[in-house]
Amino acid sequence: MTFQNILLEQPEAGIYLLTVNRPKALNALNSATLAEIQAAADAVAEDAAARVLLVTGAGEKAFVAGADIAEMQDFTPEEGEKFAARGSHAFARLEAVPVPVIALVNGYALGGGCELALACDWIIASERAVFGQPEVGLGVSAGFGATQRLPRKIGQARALELLTTGRQVKADEALAIGLVNQVVPAPELMSKGLGVARLIAAKGPLAVRHTKQAVIDGADLEFGAALALQSKLFADLCGTGDQKEGMRAFLEKRAARFQGR
Image (cartoon, rainbow, N blue to C red; front, top):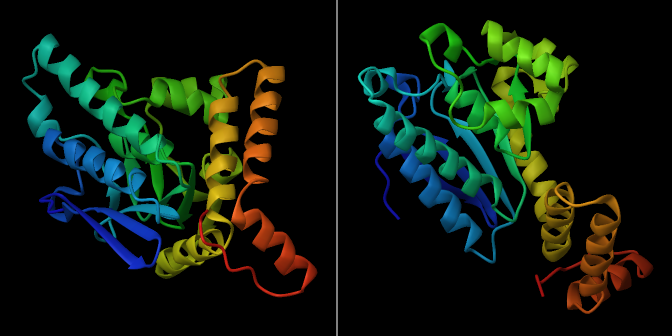
């Protein structure tokens, strides 16, 4: 699959790396880039051998510095609705990838860039990362999901503060408020991400997928129904070869050799 604005690579078996590759534009998101992110997410979702998807931006300055203002400045309401829907759909498809999706934020993650990171399952940030939703300073509101994902991530009051002031948050504060999971030195960001990906890839792949499904789908269910879903997914795994291999390996004190079936 060939892309113009992103890269989709497999640095190791089962580990995908999606890089927004417009460094001269600070990786700004235009319609073409959003379409490519959606296509890449679909490709990973369809690969039964996929274990993890890492998402980052090219260069050292920006993860994604926002949506492409040059494209947006003359939008009509109809064009604005279409653009917002494009971004929302792309990020929803990324969020729906059945394996863990981890954002590696290596600089500015503003506007649509912060929303891209929020659509991932969790965020590892470099010490130089900066997050923010500056849309109100441009006369618009967030269009790609921040008004919904940010409150769910850090709470309604903190989210409203950031969304209505446009205040930017550096990595240390992002960690303190629960926006990111970890902050690492900038030169170590990719190696840290790959290390986490390897750790996940070594686990039972069906178990990892079922675990993500239980957490994501269960969040939208009544608590009892969510527990019932968890029990069903657990039961399904008990009929797999991976479950037998994992428990046999534990009892035999050796590393499991999972086959994904």
